[in-house]
Amino acid sequence: MPLIRPVTRDDFPQWLPLWQGYNKFYGRSGETALPSEITQSTWGRFFDAYEPVHALVAEENGQVIGIVHYLFHRNTISIAPTCYLQDLFTAESARGKGVGRKLIEAVYEQARRAGCPRVYWHTHHTNATAMLLYDKVAQHSGFVVYRKDL
Amino acid sequence: MPLIRPVTRDDFPQWLPLWQGYNKFYGRSGETALPSEITQSTWGRFFDAYEPVHALVAEENGQVIGIVHYLFHRNTISIAPTCYLQDLFTAESARGKGVGRKLIEAVYEQARRAGCPRVYWHTHHTNATAMLLYDKVAQHSGFVVYRKDL
Amino acid sequence: MPLIRPVTRDDFPQWLPLWQGYNKFYGRSGETALPSEITQSTWGRFFDAYEPVHALVAEENGQVIGIVHYLFHRNTISIAPTCYLQDLFTAESARGKGVGRKLIEAVYEQARRAGCPRVYWHTHHTNATAMLLYDKVAQHSGFVVYRKDL
Amino acid sequence: MPLIRPVTRDDFPQWLPLWQGYNKFYGRSGETALPSEITQSTWGRFFDAYEPVHALVAEENGQVIGIVHYLFHRNTISIAPTCYLQDLFTAESARGKGVGRKLIEAVYEQARRAGCPRVYWHTHHTNATAMLLYDKVAQHSGFVVYRKDL
Image (cartoon, rainbow over all chains, first blue to last red; front, side, top):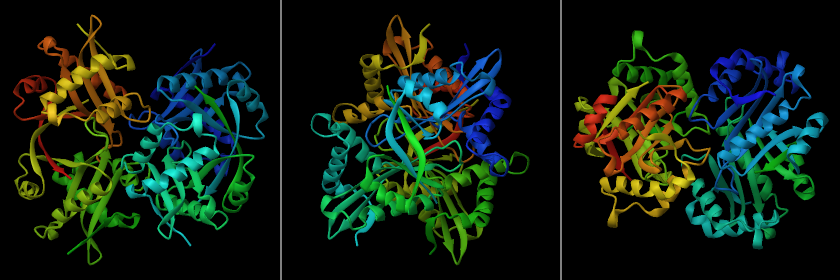
């Protein structure tokens, strides 16, 4: 089973293709690829003690095979912050082996230690494969996401 | 039409019943009411320059008839933060007059000034009345919310 | 008298030489100049609603003749944050006219509105000219600064 | 030698008298004592994953004999945050044994891991005993602190 651990600066070459794979899945590739400035900024925030933005990686045999990013933010209905699990991605060759589940559970553990009462995330309602897992480890809240791009 | 403005400390007596009305709508009343410590903490954060947690109110004839709370938080796919519109509530007597819409649009304006590329919020998929408005001013993203209470 | 107002993105060409002048005063010029990445990062934070980092400028006849940067941060002996006035600089041609004082007082006003009980800053003990002003508008606390570069 | 470790919620009864001893040293006792609301707020922030406010304790034979509080905040002349070591206190019975030094060095280690280029603190210029230690582990910067209470 893979080891789940906080990302380190040395992971960059292995983290990058997974981050790009994740972005491609959501249509951010080619002409619509995420600008590299954003990737640099996000990467830097994982190592900025002022920022509540964190990353864990799943490592097996020296290979990073999965990534998860989460951040803490304020919530008006609690004193403690809430934990937003924003990005989860597993290398194609490592799918179906419980890596995603282990990454999610590791975020739960970090949030628990941080005194955080809740972890949440968004997924597209058509993402049936992912929801098979999500329904096992979390609750489909019945809430939907509205957005306005400015 | 109501005036939309930032909340001030003097608004507390008028803000509180709207906040309680909002919480009641989501089942947080009576035995499951939000502890007053949380209300005090959230209220204090609106006036804490370190906290990216904000509130606007709609005022008409000296009465606060609507409230909206929003906060900025990090986002891994942008350099600028994202804006989460967490709470929106209008006094019952002031419904159907466009107050909610004005409050949402005022959040857009604040987010725009703040260089924020997106505002989002969550609503329960059964909240049909609210969605009539939301569908006019924003995009139903197709994303659903998963949660894990720790 | 100059107008004191929040910085805007359009001010960059006028803000930059003052920022560079300020850095030069503290020995950060030529080979020891501040890397431009830091200047870009700091400038961006003034417009990042998640960051409690702010700038005001003094403008006269369309010219920016002074700048002040301040930030809010936590303090263990208060619930409200403290306000750190980090940088203050006036164009050489505009010295001795009270611009620095107006900038400091404008920070006081911002801090007051933000519910912040204290503004503080650091100055080198040999900076006699500046201290003539500081002794008029604030209190020489008797505290000294220790530092460890890691 | 004592063990230096992050504070835990269970440490409260042992942390509190040291925190009060520290405040008393700075004249905050009796009628000028820190309100308990502030102590509760600061204590809570140590365990709030959104807050960059941290505490370490020195423990020996199950007793907490020293405390140090530090926080990360923005700095206009660096991309990474700076580390402010705000409070340091050792039980009277444990003085002169290097506990303060170990606590300071533990903060250096935390700041280093966090990618933070500098740790700083304030001390009163009459605090000769403390400065004997500070002069060994850090640099007397020559900067003095100005303050304005609003």
